[in-house]
Image (cartoon, rainbow, N blue to C red):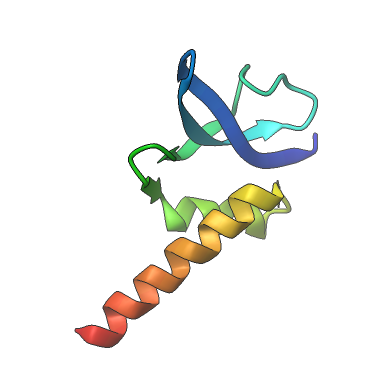
Length: 86
């Protein structure tokens, strides 16, 4: 079973937010998933990813989508900046 880490669209018409999920590659975009790893709301500019679980799934071979990989890099940069300050 090939696993992908991708966005699953939620919310109502014209008001999207996304779940970051680990799902079987053949499952529908908004369908069944294995585990929810975080949420992303582009309207409120809110992003939360469980970094430990994300690293676990990437470590066991899950392929993140381009968008999810970019969001994960942004979270990693923010965590590094916070660690450097304090």
